[in-house]
Every structure is written in C-alpha cells, then in structure tokens.
Image (cartoon, rainbow, N blue to C red; front, side, top):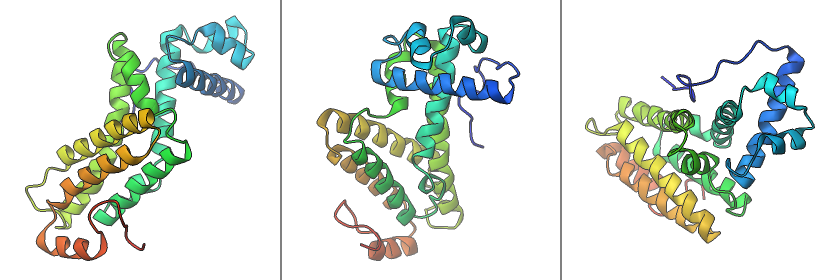
Length: 232
C-alpha cells in the first residue's frame, strides 16, 4: 500500500470552490518556492502574502497559521519529488529499470546544476527537530518514495528475479538512503559524481541478490558501474 504524505497529521482542509482551490494552490506553490530558497524559518507569512498578492484575511482563510501552511508545502513537495522521477519510479520491475530510474535521478539533478538538493531532504533537515507534525509529514513522504522502490523489488522477487531471502523493504531503504546522501553531496560539490557513485553502489547491492538466471542476463545487459547502461 502506498502511504500518502502526512495522512495521519494533515490539517483538515475547508471545503473550497474551484476558484478557492486555485487560489490555495497558488499560495502553496509560492510558499514552497520561498521556503526552498530561503528556508522555512526565513520565510514569513508576510513574505508569502507579498509573493502572492493576497491579503492577511485571505491567507488566514486557507491556513490557520504558518504550521498549517508548512504542512501543505510538505505535501506539495512530496508530489513534485515523486513526479520528477516518473515514469521510471513506478516501472521498477527489473534491474535494467532500476538503472533507468537511477539515470533519471542523475539527469534531473544535472539539469539543475546540482543546486537546491532534494526538497524533502531540505525540509527534513530544518523541521525534524522542532516541528513534530511537519516531521511526520516529511517522514510519510519519504515512506511513499521508499514504498514505490520496494514495490518494484517485490515484483522482481515474485517473478523469481531476486532470491527468496532478499528483503525488498530493506533494499529499498538502502537505495533511498543512497539517493539522499548522494543528492546532499552533489549539492555541496556541484557535481553529480557523488550521486552517481552512491546510486551505483546501492544498485550493486541489489545485483548480489539476483537469482542465478537473472544474474546471467543482468551480466550481459546491465554492466556494473557507471560506465554504461542498457542500450548504450
């Protein structure tokens, strides 16, 4: 089951008209951009009001306080992070597919010149110690990401491509951890090299759990290391 971000802790949203939903989404999008650029602590409600040309009463109509707005921002960032990895993230049914996902993650980061890092990672570093509700929402977002990785690995194990003793959940957690660490190092180095290395080693960890027949096929079509990919 895919875990939705912050489902247990999300602030209930008021019933909105179509126009109201558009306005709310505009506010959340602007707040997400400001918080990504300046941090949550460095973004005030007045900053959001100025950036969206909304009145104080209008802002409080949609969000009771800054915490409620932060919750909405976390939800939006989860959606954007997952969407940026599609369709590869939901097509992880083979080792070759995992490498295609790896290449997409690297390409997206390269297109951004390694600036900004992972939006979820940035929110986690800022909110995890001081805002339990926001931390829970970010945790749920990471869980949604991990579950998508695990779903593909479960499918591989069900087809016999992974040995029976392989733990898809643990392997998915390792891949996600590699992605997060690689994204952070890529951000500081302004180079995708750390991200490539982290993901390649994580996928090597999956390779060792391939069944003998699948390993032989993978050996022919998915070379180890970053030098080549299927079809190259």
